[in-house]
Image (cartoon, rainbow, N blue to C red; front, side, top):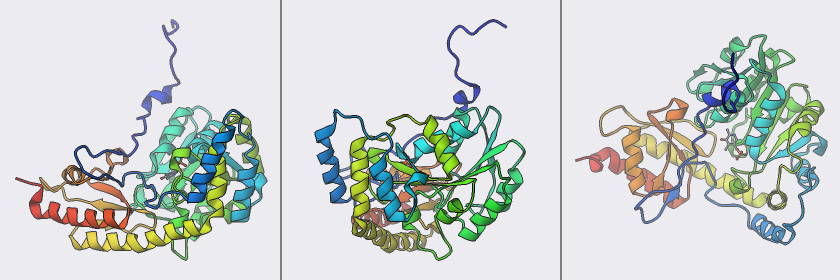
Length: 370
Ligand SMILES: *Cc1c(COP(=O)(O)O)cnc(C)c1O
């Protein structure tokens, strides 16, 4: 066999469909409401913005590669040992680091049918094989996941709650999943939306991680903390996983303005509470009002709703998306998630939410046709 004439990436790389982020523009609309990436309508804490600005004074210095101050602040806020925390440039980076550290070529990583697509991409990028477990009612199904496990399985990725469906797995089910996995399989619990969930049977997974050797929990500053632009996430993990990830991550993977903003954001619990309360008011309102229009909405515990459209000409998800866009409402199309008949809408400001319902009503009444 002759050598290739140019560098060739590993086999899985070209199987990756590059992640398509939510759009942010609505050409021609007077005012744009970006409801496509689950960002908070309240923005970050003013304290975080102030800390970010203050960090401009020290841009010539490398950041603290150990993220000591931020890990201590997280430890204090969540009652965790800072030694068991690793910070990343978004939880996306931590997902990559985990895949790179734990997958050999041909190893399998499991996610569910409508699971977060980054799981598939980091698996392929590491030479692993993505294995898809079917869902039930757009919800991860523990038995289905366990039935996909083989001797080659090394990671199970689960977003809880899941994006883009908004559904969740109760903590008892998550424990049952963990109990059913072989000891050498890492359970990655991605709890990006944990702060929004108001259900008695939900837990982000801290206790599971604290009491086992093969579970990690990922959290992010991108959602309720409103710091998506800064790329800041963290992982709570067993000491041996912390060790493995610390060996492979970049020495300065998290920048100092982001860390400063993160510490300040954690100190402003009232701001997080306001964002959670806003969501607790508008998530059920949107679910109900959109439901009243005759559209099915998947019950969500996160900060977004999944809206299903009929396949009828003029009334499809694609038609609705085009109609809403003209009114400045930018939602998320879900073809890559195998949900072509649905749109995902982030809970927005009161103005955005009311405009969305009114616009959907006009759309269904035929204002978009003819
Ligand atoms: C938004 C989101 C994240 C956060 O990613 P960051 O890289 O921290 O911005 C992680 N997981 C899921 C399922 C998400 O929807």
